[in-house]
Amino acid sequence: MRFLYSCVAAVTAVLSAPLGAQVMTRENSRDLQLQELVAESVRNNPEIRAAGNERLAAQHRVLPAGALEDPMLEVGVINAPLRSQIFRREDMTMKMLGLSQKIPFPGKLDLRQEVAAKDSESVAHAYQETVNRVIRDLKSAYFELAFATVSARLVEKNKQALEQFLKISESRYSVGQGGQADVLKAQTQLSRMNDELIKLGRERQTIAAELTRVLGRRFDAVAPVPMALQGRGAQLQFEALMETALSQRPQLLALKSLVDRSSKSIELARKDYYPDFDVKFSYGQRDNTLDGMRRDDLVGVTVAINLPVRRETKRDPRVAEAIAMRDQAKDLYQAQSNELASKLRQQLAIAEQSLASARLYETGILPQARLAVESSLAAYRVNRVDFLTLLDNQMTVLSYEISYASALSGYNKALAEIDLLTGKPAL
Image 1 (cartoon, rainbow, N blue to C red):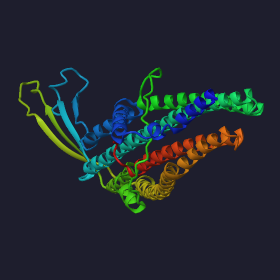
Image 2: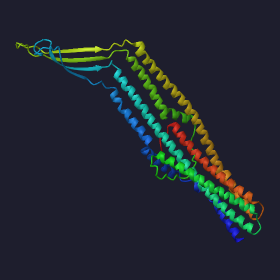
Image 3: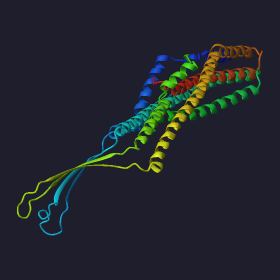
Image 4: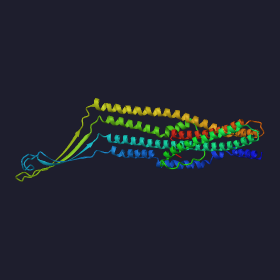
């Protein structure tokens, strides 16, 4: 009997271990760890670095787009006779030096530079969207790994309780107060716990690999150990969040830049109805005549223009193309806005439901379930309930504890998704 009471005391100690010590932690510590991980991901993630290089390349395209073409230098001999003394025989024979410059119609260069600037702006917003998406992936993997870690601890805790139950059932069976079925049932549940720990170990490795990838670490690097889950409340109102999303979501801002770019492209295409200019200056040096008479050098200035005559086959289609691209960008913006609103409502519902469930588990369901286990354990000692009832109550507690951790994980993942949808800057 002394052994039986010691087993009961051990079970009570395991059951009374506060889940909050495993699931809840200081909020500042977790935020600090996330800040460090976010900074590491922004610094090392190759996808972010690639997007940053694309942004840099787009910035370098702005100035050249508004620059004139290189001038053309021309050197040669004109009007040279085929006989000897070619530079002194004919009056129109000269050594020529020319310089020409193509000048677009006024306004074209500015429009080209504005188009390139809007392209660069769009790429910059796309870069920020990539950063936000990677951070969302980082947080999701972080909270999934935290949930898997908590689940493993809970299963291990439950396993310890079942081991004590097994000792109790074996002790009672040895003195004829219990049946062999109780022992076999406890052994079966212990085997299930071992199998669950194997599954959780595999899941943790998979999630840790994903977290390592998002952080930009080497494949053989050790994944960080996440802080325990917590469920701090946040002000979540759809109207305010949607307004924030429309004003700062990089994906929508990039589409706005594309709309502006297309409008500038329409203006540029319409400017193509006007001619460009090719200004040329030339200088011709003439030698003296055969009898020594001096001949003056000559200069020339010419202006050439192209003739934009192919309107129906060349310029009208370009204008129509630019208009279609602008309308496409507008439609994409509207479609993305509608999709954003839908996803935002979904994530708000998930966050609210997850937080409500977590609070219900924490304040009502879990305390009652633990009391039921303690009560059934005390009743089992005096043969007032059977072993299966005790075992079922304990497995119910495990299920509720895992559901509680799952609700906390789902809530934090929904917040990370909401941050992405609203374009919230990183921690």
